[in-house]
Structures are given as structure tokens and as C-alpha cells.
Image (cartoon, rainbow, N blue to C red):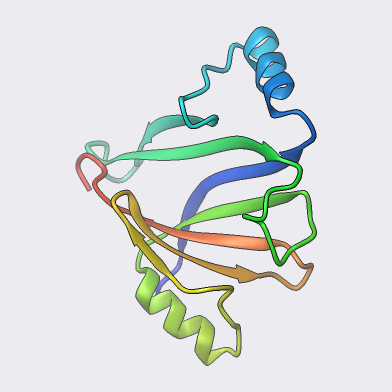
Length: 130
């Protein structure tokens, strides 16, 4: 069975992304990347040579990235086999939001949970030791 393996990221809407990033950088020491988020690397407990990554980022309040959800945040879950998980979800009657994407840093698909929260599913690519 394909499954979630961890938290891939948390993304939230804010009225002023620059002020939000500045506050977090100044008060909590968060070093933001050029794309406006913050990611940290960690090692898998069962395979310490495998380095994973989790992302956290504020988005502009008017972003369409979290649609069709009207929630102010979106969760990203790391998955072990996105294609198999998509098949499982479809078999359970869960529809995808949009079409899956295959990018240089992994494969992505989106669903909505029962609370109207958009969930991003991410099968990472190119992680050291992976």
C-alpha cells in the first residue's frame, strides 16, 4: 500500500509576505530562500544516508495555488509512491484537484480533505541517499 511518509511542508496565506518573512527572520532566525520559503534537511531514522527536506512558506493572500480550497493554509505530505497512491485514492472515490505534475524535484498531485483543506502529495526526487 502506498502511503504518506512524513510532512513535506506547510504553506499559509498572509496579507504581507515581506513583513511576515522579516518578522520570522528577525525574531526566530529563519533564513528564507530566494523563492521566499524556508526548508530544512533531516536524515531518515532507518536510513541515515537518506537526506529528506521539509518546506515552510508564507504565500500572498490572493494566491490561487491553494484553490479550490478557501482555507488559509495547505499541507504537503511526502509519499513513497505517488502513482500507486493516486490509484488507491481514485479507487476510494477521491478525486484529484488538477492534473499530477512531474518536476525536477519530484512528482506532485492534489486532493481535498473532508474539511475543504487542499492537500499536496509529493514524491521527492533526487534526495541524497534516496
